Image 1 (cartoon, helix red, strand yellow):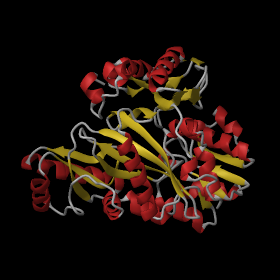
Image 2 (cartoon, one colour):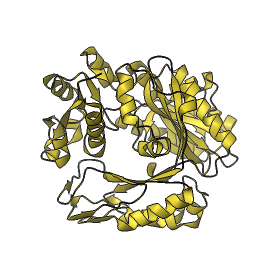
Image 3 (tube, one colour):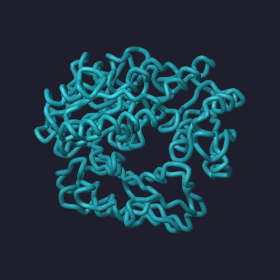
Image 4 (cartoon, one colour):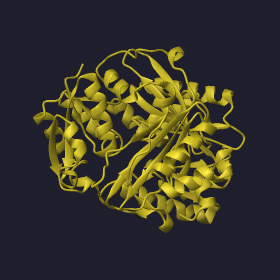
Length: 447
C-alpha cells in the first residue's frame, strides 16, 4: 500500500481524496496555486506546495511543477482527481517514468480512448452499439457530404479529441455542413491541438446515461450500474441520478454489460465511465469513455455503498477488487445537484466573490461535498462549481422531495448560485415524471 500520495488537484475533489487517504492510513501532499494559498481544506493534507500563479495553465497544468512537488514530497503515487491533468496521457506516462504510480488507467489506454474516433472503432470491435456515422476520420468536404447523404441529415461534426461540446457542430444540409466543418476544425485545433473530425448521425432529443466501471490488474472488471446525466446546460451537467428513470431493465442490463465488454477490449484498469445516449425508441449508443473519476461519482457511491476513491487507490496499489459483479447491489435512489457560483438570471454567468454566510443542509440521506466555508473567496480562475448536494432515499419520488427540502435549506450568501434554477428543475412536471432529454433546459428556460 502507498504511504504518501500527492493530490494533483484543488477544491472539492482534493478534499474528497484527502479524506479517503486519511481513512486508509495514507499521508497526503497537496499542491496549490497562489489563488488558493491559505485555503482551509489544504490544512487537511500533511504537506502542501505552491506550484505557481493563479492561472491553471501556469500552476495546476504545469507537469514539471507537479512532478517536482511529488519528488520533494517523497510520494509513491499521484491522484489527479477530475479535470486539469486527469485525462492527460502524457502526464500519466511522465509519472510512471519517474517511478510514481498514476492513480488511473495506463497512458496507452488513455491515448486510445481519448481519441473519440479510435474509441468508436474499439466499441464496434467489442460489439457495443455506436451512433451511425463515418467509418473513420473525414478528410475533406466531399467525403463529409458523401457520408452525410449516406446516413441522412441532420449530422453532427465532431472533433476526435473533443470534449465539453467544443469542436462539435450541427449541420442540417450541405451548405451548413461546409460551414460546420470549417468552424469545428478551427475550434478543435485551437482547443486540443488536433483538428481531426468525424461525422455522426444527429440523435434528436436523446437522454445521456453513463455506466460506472472498475477494473483491477488481475483481470476483474465490474460495473456499478448507471447514472442519468440528461439534465445539462450547454453540455455541462447540472443534475445526475441513479437509477435512470424510465429506463427498461433490459436496456439497463445490456448497457452495463456493453460497458464491461468495452473496458476489457481496451485493457483498461482503475475507475472509468462509459457514456451512452439513448434515443426515443430506447436504443442506446456509445459516445465516449471518460478515463477518470467523475464529478458525479457520489451518486454511485450512495446506491452501491462502494467508496470509489478508495477503490481507485487500492487498484492502483495492485490490490484485487474485493468484490465481484454479483456482490454489487443497487439500493434505493440517489440524486446530485451541482451548486455553481453562477447567476441563472443572467445567462448563468460566473459569480465569483466572498461567501459571507454558509448554511449546509442535513438530515437522513443528505450529503454535501464541498471545500467552501463562510469567508471563502470563490476565485474567477477556476470552474464555478463550489459544491455538490447529494441525497439518497428509498425511492426516486422521496429523493426529489429530499433534494427540494435540502436546496431550500442551503444558504450561500455573498454571491449568486444556481440553486434557484435547480429548484425550478425539480419542480417541473416533466422532470418529476422522468420525461426529459438533453434539450430540457434550453426548451424551458432562457439561461
